[in-house]
Length: 141
Image (cartoon, rainbow, N blue to C red; front, side, top):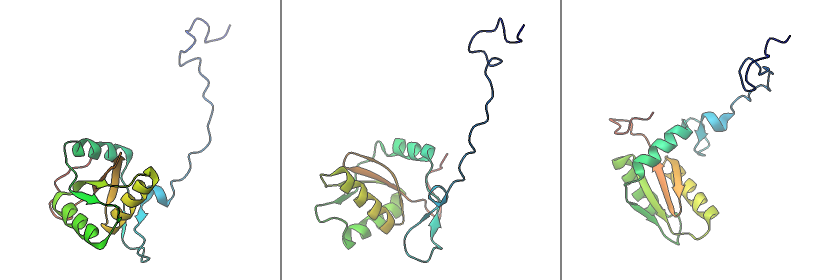
């Protein structure tokens, strides 16, 4: 007589424990992001999925404060983004590009230039976040 007879089919005592493959060691894309300056010393941690979800929730009621036109990412747009993100920590940016891939590329380029993270994109709107060094308003989970 087996020890699991009389137990329901999905009972944990009937389930065999089979060792699975070892989890991969997280690479640098999971741990930090180099902003591309070439020095390597301006590395900041990337946002986790939970943090991105939290920031998207906070950004829901915000209006876009920066607009990227057909001209793309220009120095005045970068300066305005830096000023806005310094003042607010979390901002929405409206990107006027028709292609979804182009919008993602513009959002990533703008985030790198402003030393921020892309918390998410929804249609033509990107959400950028950069933690303030002094007195941050947003407490991350």
